[in-house]
Structures are given as structure tokens and as C-alpha cells.
Length: 317
Length: 291
Image (cartoon, rainbow over all chains, first blue to last red; front, side, top):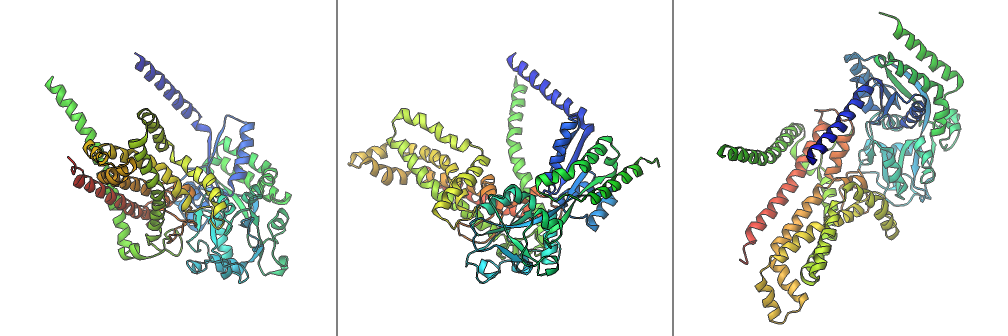
């Protein structure tokens, strides 16, 4: 009797849980992609949930590349991207009949960081970074004094985003010269918090990730200046700040961030209102989470792209 | 009545078959998936190349860095767990009052019931910073800290199984030892431990295979950087961590990168399989010695 009662109540709970799930299925907005863009999308989603709690939004972070794979299979509605969609990803989406629109939502600087106890490295040149991160460095460039002779004879421990992330693609493109090409003997994680933890607890560490993660953990990390050898955009090493990313003097490690919206999803009213909300609030929120907002002009341009896209959807075929 | 008996028998057989079929199924998947891998990557590369970078542009498929990471963390774990576990077993068996033994044994086994993810963060957030005060050159991710914590985790395995083995030593041996004037300490370490050695070795080997297969602790605290080293202060990657890393990412199914996890899996399977068989062999060979 007792067992029956338990079973009964369990099944009631189970059914209730299922019922809850299916009735709200209609209004879930699924977002995945870049862990760099994640903080801003999550911040927007949080605000939006406050406005309209009936619409559920799930924001995941499996990297720009991982997100585009799901986006191309129409498994998600919006993909956060820290680089532009690649030709082969466009092909893949097309082959599945997925159409989309691309919107710039903010600018980001990539921070190269070391441990605060590291008292020798305050800046680095692009050539030195290339020496350190190029595929040929694997198993060869293992010590700090191999990068610059006056640095100590200690092992350098490298930390960087996983190969599926747009940050990795962008960094390798900007530093090594070829996207997706780097040494493989470093701690690679899609989870930026692992990288923060790694660099924050290791005196000999050097890592790179989006500026927002640096700002969030600025007390545990030391950001170093980058010298691109080009005096036209500011001479000497330059650290990433709101100012230097905005005026493009922090080169070559600054970049635009995007969201991609599936057209089918763009037809749904809740997605439309979410994206509109995103565009209305992204500038305030991106500053809050450590990104560089678009200028008024750029914002208007993006809004125009979006409204043109929405009206193109609503025209009956 | 008879048919009811048959049905029960059938159900029991089915239960037994499930575990065997699962093993066969896992083996089948491992072998079939990794065979594709070995068609593309020569076995000699897999066994002797000293770099493991299958996800990067410059691909190397040498399993050695992952194996060294696995061996290193497991070795540290055993160095921690064996003396402590054995001391606990001897204490419980020879020295502890009976009531205390009954009370302390289940408490010890709580160590084995703590979720490994908790152990992992314990290693990362507590043990590593503590060790860094002693060894300032130690990296935040390293083999030592998760190795020690893994050792703590497998202590109950060694102490409990070894205690059973010590307990099973015939009374006559113990009494003979006391009879010729040996102290408790001499009896424990010169008579009982050698007499129970087969059981103790089995417990150690089972604990090693537990450590080799342990995933969460090393994934959290040992880092994710495959490197061929036995330096306990630098980040390493174990076979299990690699498998987790790849399964969590978004590697395309059927690609060579995807198949590497099965190749790594089969290497891991072979390691634990051999260990388990050695323990089985030792148990069979030596256990009847005193009966």
C-alpha cells in the first residue's frame, strides 16, 4: 500500500514535469555558440526574462564553431559568434536549408594575460607571440628566455581557448597568420573560467581570452601590452582598454562580435521581440560586461539590417 | 510451481547476461571504432610518437603523453594510499578495540562515497594552493595535487580489502607467533602481512585500476595539456581527461578526431583489463596457501 502510494505520487510528479515541459516548448529560444559572446547574450536574456517571464531562453556555450554546427542543423535559433561565419559553414547551413542574418553586437579585445606574480613580462610583440604560438614552436619553445633572452630560464605554461572557439580562430589568424594553426601542447579549454583559474594559479603561465573575462578577474590576472610594430596606430606596447579597442590602436587583437539568427526562428514573434530587445539594450549591457559598445551610427545601421530582414520575412511568398 | 521456478531462473540468467552483453558491446564499439583509426594512423605512431595533438593543425597521435599522465597521477595516488591504507588495516585488525573497529569502518568508507567532482574541486581549490606554499614553482594545474586526493579517495579500498585479507589469516598462525614471544608489531608486519600478501596485492591492484580510470578529479585539477613528463609540478593530461575533453567539445562524428577517443579508450581498457587479470591471477594462485 505504502509503495503504491509512493509510486503514484512519483508518477504524478513525473507527469507534471512532462506537462510543464511540453506546454512551454513553443516559446523556448535556443541560443548557443561563443563563450566570448556568452556574457552579453546572457545579460540581455536575463533582462528580457524580467520583462517577459513566459518566454524561456536557454543560452549555452560550446564555442563559435560548435555553435555553427548546431546552427547549420537548425538545432538552435541564434548563434553567438566571435568571428564571421566561414565559407564551409555557410555551405553546411545551405545544404540544410538554413537561412540567417548576421548582426554585429559589440567589439572585443583579446587580452593576453600572465600571473600577477610574473614580474618580468609586461609587454610582448606580435613577432614574439608568433614565435611562441606557431605550430613549429611545439616541443621547441618551452622556456621564457627563448622568447626574449632577458626573461628567466623557466618553463612557460600556455593556456588558450579550445579549437572550436572563435577566439582561437581569430587569435591564430591574427598572430600566426593562418586560422586554426597553432602549437598543440597547451592547455586548451572551451571554458574560459578554466583558463582564468590556470593562469591565476601559475606563476609561469601565459594565456589569452576575451577581454570581458579579464575584466571580471582583473584582480587575479595581469594583462600585458601588445606591440604590433606599426607606429601608425600607436607606438609601443598597448594594453586593451575600452579606449584602445574603440580607436583601433589595440591591434591586431580586437574584433567584432556577432549574433546569427535563423530565418525560420526570425519569423517567430518571441524571437523578434528578443532580438529587438537585444539591439536596444546591447550597448549599455556590453559596457557592463566588459565589451566595447557600437557607436550610435553603427547601432542604427545594425538596427536597419534587422528591420529590413524582418520585413523581408513577413512578405508572403 | 515448476514453471514459476523456470521463469525466475530465466530472469536471473537475463540479469547476468546484461552485464556480460554490456561488456561485449563496449568492447565491440571500442574495437570497431578504433580499427578505423588504426587504418589511418600507423600503430607505431600511436605507440612511439611522443606528442599527442590530434585536434590541432599539426597532428600527432602518440599516446605516450596521455599514458605518462595517467601513470604519474595513479602512481602518486598509490604512494599516498598504500602506506596509509595498510596502516589502517593493521590497526583495525590488531590494535583497535572491537567496538571502535565496528564504529570506524563505515566512517572510513564514507571517503569512497564522496562524489569525485567534489574531490576534484578540493584538489584544485584547497590542496593545490596549500602545496604551492611549499613548492612555489608548482603550476596551478599539476599531477601532484589530484594524485594525492585520488590517493585519499582509494584509501578505503585498500584498507577495507587488506583488512579482510588480514582477518582471514588463520588464527593458528597468529597464535603461533605470539607463542614464540613476538610482539604485536612483529606479528603484524612479519607474520600477518606476508601471510595476507595475496589479498593485499589484490587490493592494491584494484585500487590502481580505480585510479587509472578515475576521470573527474584529474579532469578538474591536473590540467588538459598532454605532455610526456614525470614532473609532478606541471600540467598533464590523462587518457580519461582527454576523452572527456573531446566528448564535451563539438568534434564531428566519424572524423579522425572523433575516433581518437576510441583509440584512447581502448588503451585505457587494456590497462585496466591487464591489471584486473593480474589481480585475478594472484588471488587464484595464492589464496589457498594456508588452508
